[in-house]
Image 1 (tube, rainbow over the protein chains, first blue to last red):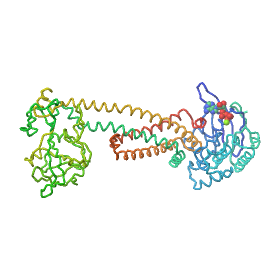
Image 2 (image 1 turned 90 degrees about the horizontal axis):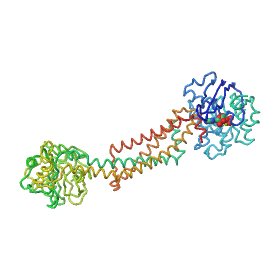
Image 3 (image 1 turned 135 degrees about the horizontal axis):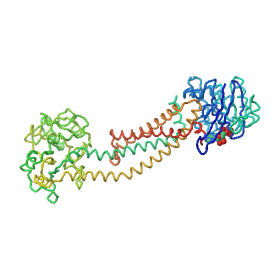
Amino acid sequence: MVELKNITKTYNPKKANEFTALKNVSLTINDGEMTAIIGRSGAGKSTLLHILACIDNYQSGEYRIDDTLVKKLSERELARIRGEKIGMVMQDFALVEDFSALENVMLPLDFARKKKSNRRDLALGALSSVGLVELAKKPVSKLSGGQKQRVAIARAIVNEPSLILADEPTGALDTKTSAEIMDVFKRLNDEGKTIVIVTHDPNVAKQCERVVEISDGEIV
Amino acid sequence: MLLKTAFKNLKKNPVMNIVCLLQLTAIFLITAVMVSSLFVRYRKYLPVKNFLEMNGVFCEYSFFSGAELPGTATEDMRGSVQTFEELRDFTGARNVFGIKCFYASHSSPSGELLYDDLPSELILYNDTFIDRYIPKLARGKWLDPASDELEAVIPEGLYGADVGDVIDMLFDDEHVKVKVVGVMKSGEDFLSLNSPRARTYDYPKTYRSLYDAYYTDIDDGNPPMLLSESVLQRLCPETRTMIIAAVFDFGGTDIPLQEALKRAAQTGGYTTALESINAASKEYIHTELMKLLPIVIVLMVLTVVSAVSVSAIAARRRLRDYAKYYVLGLRWRQCALVNLFQTLVTGAAALIIAAAGLTVVGATPLSETFMVVANGWTFLAVLGVFALYLIFSMIMPLIMLNSATPKELLQTE
Ligand SMILES: Nc1ncnc2c1ncn2[C@@H]1O[C@H](COP(=O)(O)OP(=O)(O)O)[C@@H](O)[C@H]1O
Ligand SMILES: [Mg+2]
């Protein structure tokens, strides 16, 4: 269970371009839920997801993962949560451009505390679940937007995290591929993973059991 | 694993890394050349510095300086004066640092002249000189005036002898055994003050004309051997030698410089005040450095500017990758380590290339022009630059990080 309580996030605090992107946001997501976060561009969806992914700070409020206060965690524990508990698909994919698709997908396995011996097979498995196994050796810089997005998804799921956060994961995909990707998420959800998807697409939102709308930094 | 990631990053970004590598190599080379060229000038000046800073007179008993030269002998005493003690007493100097020489031939152990060998010049240092000066030896030890053997320091390879060997020589017609106690590298400089062999004739006289170089492979005669004057006097008193130069130290006496110059000239030599040699030497070093300075500054500025910009671009680019690693479960500290490894590998490779380059240059005649001295100082300077580069590339990401969270790094394009 992840729980946000009265989270306020201000960019560039105390500067001329100060901007409060999240205002007193409270949200609880239970284990095994599949949630869509919708809202207009600039509403604060990505900001919310980054806080959930433990890669951004906030000015006030509390964030708990499984009843543990995230603020109290050490740098080491946080890194471990980012690497092994959470799988994050960034809006701009955040792939290492010089690496191949396979190398990108292997990164979370390389960084994990417990080293699995079959890292390559696991990575190939993740790539095949997004239908990209034949492009494994290709440098990501040579892939199309949709292919990159699928690599990012494969990388997010390869460590079998219990919480998968995806920022507009179908944004660069056609309808058919979108549907395939949603099937991947649904399958993972069926396996018990908690899934949070930020999306513009009503079709995607429709497939989630819960929809949270955010507007001007507030949940409506 | 972090190391592996670092290597992977290096491998994946060859162009950027090779540019960085070449720049670093260039910086190392420039540093080495710069420090060397400063050092070469000082290296030769430093051993004579304590002579030149004395209050006294340099006196050259030249074989060919004529009366038209300034400071030339007003009276030639060389017929009557034989020892440096006599010169000292005559001039009233406190100390005399003197050099004599004579020629002798290599002989067979039984004392027959070996005709295929040209005569060697034997350079004799008096005791005060030996006390004050040690040339750079490759092996062995410097001369001992108290020795009861005729010791010599020789250039590497002379007569095939090395430290501990005994060389058979003919001094006039006397068969003499000379024991090798020290060996100098071929091409090494040593003080001879005034030698008829090829060397720099500069005017005004600077420290450079006090030197001779020790070449084993010269055509016109054998290279010199260095011996103690007092030991020769003691063991072979009959050997005829010539006084070739002396430094008269008038420090602590109340004899004014003009008078000192006059008295030294009366001993039959061509005199120069030490202070004017010193001034000319400093002037020479200064001019040489000034000649070098603009080139050095331009090169330094160019390389530093390009290195900074390239490593800034590289650091930005890397930082974005590190931010991605961060999202995927690395700590910042680990990212910093990856960065350090990457920097170290590039730096070490550049060091090796630079060192190899210098070795190659050092083996060619180019070494005269670039004057690269592979010594501790050059090495230290290069290491210093390496350390600066390391610190710089560690600090750069920190500065960039200070103003941004990993997430913001990902957002900036
Ligand atoms: N690093 C940042 N610095 C300043 N403002 C930001 C930053 N990131 C996002 N914002 C602003 O915060 C608001 C919410 O952004 P975001 O969460 O990315 O919106 P969404 O994902 O819903 O489109 C936007 O107005 C955006 O301009
Ligand atoms: Mg967004």
